[in-house]
Image (cartoon, rainbow, N blue to C red; front, side, top):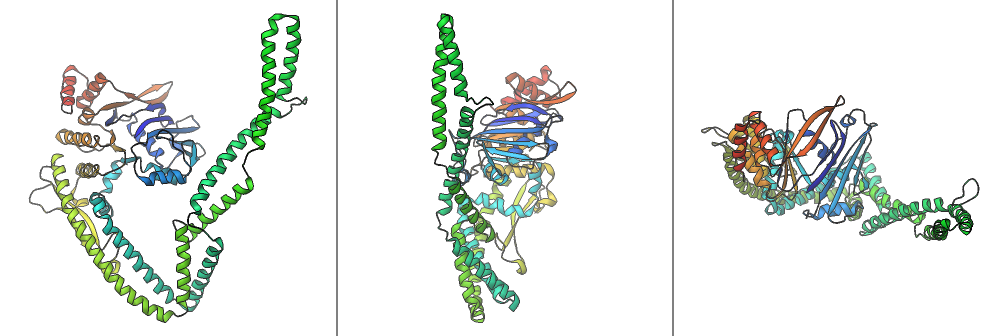
Length: 564
């Protein structure tokens, strides 16, 4: 979970530290105080686009640093990315930083190691999920519905998705090979040359399947050794290099010790400093020698390091060129290329074989697709029932939510997700049939539908920190009270951060943070403050009535008691 966020020179935030706790963390403040800037800063850490416009006026750069406790992250994929990127972990702590300069450059680091943006995004996806108003609008995008349904279905659906996708790949491979064999002579010659080149290039590389992993580790070690040697060499240079008079540091200390020794013979008061300089002289000579020995005895070899880098570069180039994830994929591509080259010599016979194979695989693919849809329908009925129940809890008492399946047209029948499109349907009015979500749900209803989905998925969701940016847009009163209750429920399983403008959500918080704005020396400054009990009462009161009168504070206290 997120345990600390440091922000410097970010828009109107000059310098601020935000330390969210476990449970429900609520962020509130006056309009324009900069509440969403906190979420934007976290977004920067997660890999969002950097802009020099984020930099505070008069400053050269903006800097954001987040500290995560990753003890709760169990997904092995997360640790695979860290290992592949050469990122070391100590005490289950991950420090992620991003610096944006006026020249448009952005530097991302994880545990002090510079990383590319793709690595930052891949790693942060396991740590934080931000749900903003854009995500609420995204629920209107029908292409996202099948993914949400599959997330709900979870591991029970995975074997059916995998079986379908494996057959789909096999089917597509057959279709592509048939297309290649049916090419005109000129195109066939070009394909033949390409295959021959690929076979030659991959064969000459002679890659072993465990080579990339061992080279990556070796490359990490060489980089560390190079860094160590650079520091040792610099230290050796400082200790052993001569100044304009031809003296080293040790020479100058020795000369100084000699002078003080003469003074000590004349006056006892110089004896202590004389002896200390004598010891320092002996130590400096020894240190100079030892540092020099360490620098000269380093096992680092630039030639070997370059060989490793070159070999890794070759592997990365081949993976990119032939669209493979790993060395095993490259070697498989080579074997397939050999088979295709052989088949090109007798294309008519091969095409006939492929037609039979296509017919057989197409039948298997259709069966797998139907089975996948069958399992999805079972999950869809369960999801519809649960979302409808959640929506009624969220003050849409006559809500009906349904999941519809639409068979795809023949010209684009087999899609990556199956042969049926999944569409969410909704109505809030009794007697009305559920209709396409985008045509019936208001903004406030869409927010509650997305919250209902998040609430249902939170039990299986492995991401430690969930962020909601104004999930309460378009709602108030009882609906806001219900939303607060749902957020409280989710926060029992995840760390939750929520930007709000409603008193109900602020009252439900385990920790309240106030974003305030002031003008100092003609400059606007926003700051983040953790509220104590009295501060929370005043803020809930302000959100309720715009004042912190005695009557309003009493109402705030009663509202807070609802969530104890």
